[in-house]
Length: 118
Length: 111
Image (cartoon, rainbow over all chains, first blue to last red):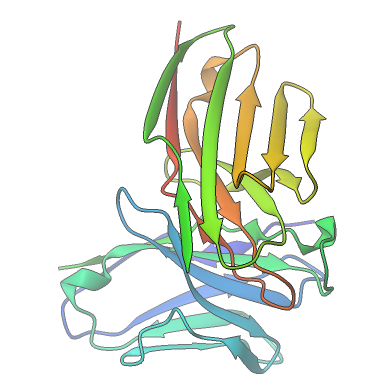
């Protein structure tokens, strides 16, 4: 059972370009989460999606950032008109469906995409 | 809001024991997670506590006291491969799933 797959692992963009980050959840997982990690800081929640639905985007900047998780294919985090401050590691996590304090709600992480904006 | 504190760095000798503390002040609580993250790699799940007490898994144990807002991760018989960052994360009450992470504790194991 493959883990959470993210690509690309490294992405270099010039200021003003667009960045597209992809995440394929673990098999059987229908919940996807995106987090951002800046150097010396903890992972910060950005957005939580289920298939074709954005459940919680409270951690995502209102401008330039968008996320989707279509019925078919990977989840995409899209950053338009990138700026130097967007340089960070972006991690995707997935979990199976379910509610309550159950171990099945463990979030499993991908290896991340390291975005560098020149 | 969420406030999660853990030490920035710890150093220990191979074969020794290290205890990483995590204190939290959160608006609601539905479990605490510990993850291990090697440089440039994915955070990997280590342990989950939702009730008070100690959970043991081989060389790693995790403890939780909800009344004190406190947890620790205990690493025994340290090995060089345990050199990594250890992340403490708190989950809010259901149906909210987003995790709030501490900044991580970098553990360096020396020979």
